[in-house]
Image 1 (tube, rainbow, N blue to C red):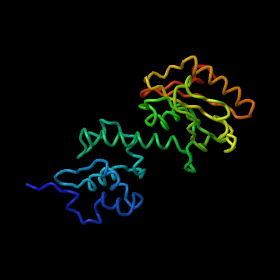
Image 2: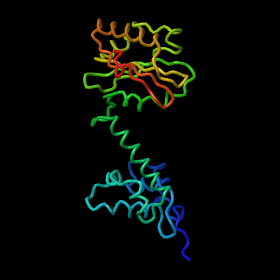
Image 3: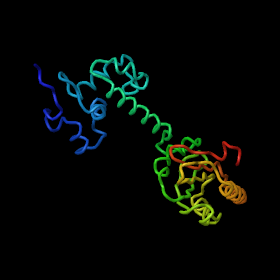
Image 4: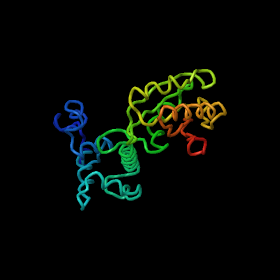
Length: 232
């Protein structure tokens, strides 16, 4: 019986994990990066060989982008790719798509809509035990200039004053801002205090010539956009 081929049987400089640690991810081939994701091969192939064979099935030469177009079921039907590896690959493809949608061509983060804000801050803010109020500063191209922590504590208890909210925006030359705060309860439904505070800040921004694009309230895995609710 043929023994299972393992990455640890390869020379040290050919092992993807060690190469990434020593030289950085940039030096790894597409197959080596994919091999790290799928982790193990089979009795006849290392994870690198399996990844190489998988990528070579793309007849149009699109590289890793080829995997985006394969459904979970199509992946599972490929030789050497079972349920777990198919799920790992689909998760990677979705994650890379979300990252790509957040960045513009020059590598700067672009905030186009409320879902971009959610992708940027959901995981950071969804489990916070106190309310944290942040301001996202953007330029005329909606590119992120700076993310500012304004206050900690509920909007009714903490002072969210236009002076503190807009001072960094003025210094940074921001053309627009987006407000973000979390609800520790997990329910992102805006309170009357949220709505009143937002309207006051919108008025202040208009005086300063800085447009308030939205106010996003982060809950536990869900969010509310005051703009989408017609409250801005």
